[in-house]
Image 1 (cartoon, rainbow, N blue to C red):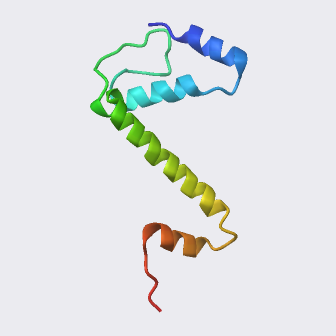
Image 2: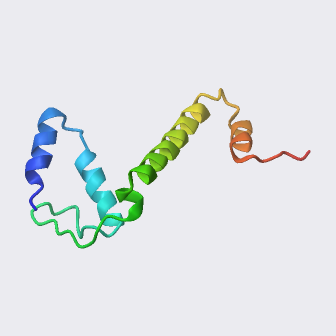
Length: 96
């Protein structure tokens, strides 16, 4: 499978588009492909793991990831009360 054409097509619209690299990197981490850096010869060596193949599991992961991202945004916007935010986020009760 040659993926350079896809990289070129995506880059034509937006030079900073990293979707292909992100997707290939994830497939490599899960052991589905060998090397996402050499797009001239991407070899599929395994099936998708259940966590990627199952739509329900993918949706649940997306929701978890969105919640984490939202928590990061809330942290940045917490007006300097970062310690309190972290304690609340992790459910830590301060003992004085």
